[in-house]
Length: 217
Ligand code: AP5
Image 1: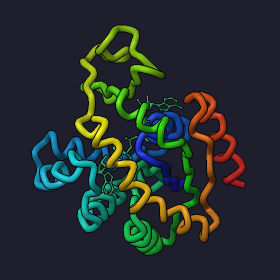
Image 2 (image 1 turned 90 degrees about the horizontal axis):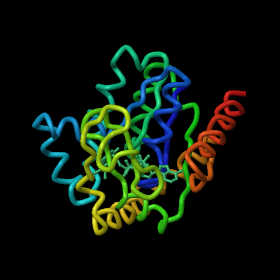
Image 3 (image 1 turned 45 degrees about the vertical axis):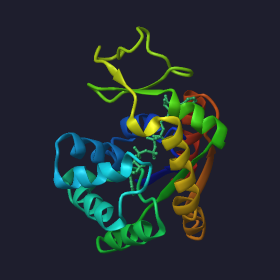
């Protein structure tokens, strides 16, 4: 399966991707995670990306297309993959189609997690991420058992720079303008499936599983 997990910032893509990747044995390719790791490692791409990410803007298409094209070359992506955070513009989607077409393949399903903006801002500003294993928490909805400590590995929890209120709101604006046109793009190809992302994480995953089952035919 070649799947795109699509949705606004905070819609639960990272949370749900962990379940899908585990149950389907396909790599979870998160462009946000890849860029944050590159920035931590001080690579040229990472440092360039950080200047866009920290202010809630999109990293330029040519940079992102190169990053994803290289990742899809890796062996583990041959059997399928789950893209989280890519594509984010129509240009990225067109390039992705071109890359896959060269291999005689294409995207099978685009799973769109729909959540309203007020809920998204709440989720983003109260998110915490583990500095060790990357597990995702939320002070309001999925709090860790011990404050500021990861349940899984005990490392400290951090707040992402781009989850401050003003930057989170900016990211939602950017999503509306630059990313939401992708709905039409994938609707036209008949592969977009809308899922109510406002339910609990377990309920959302049940809907996703159902869609994945029926989407496979
Ligand atoms: P990225 O890291 O991809 O961020 P995003 O798309 O904005 O998505 P988030 O990670 O913020 O949210 P999510 O949907 O994964 O939600 P999560 O599961 O964490 O990108 C960051 C930046 O990198 C971009 O702004 C851009 O600068 C750059 N970038 C990345 N890709 C790019 C591209 N292709 N092109 C250009 N630039 C790119 O959940 C959020 C919170 O809600 C958590 O606290 C979670 O615990 C909680 N939660 C999850 N599900 C539920 C639920 N059902 N109920 C209640 N709470 C929930």
